[in-house]
Image (tube, rainbow, N blue to C red; front, side):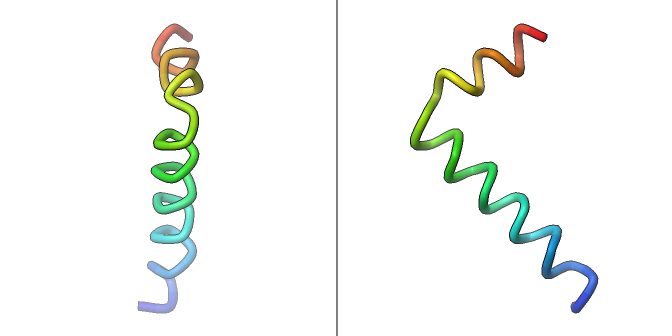
Length: 31
């Protein structure tokens, strides 16, 4: 579980970032 903590945090951070700024998602898909 300890090894999955940082991974979950990264996924949560990414999800929050994409939710707050969908523009970033489009940029990533473009590249």
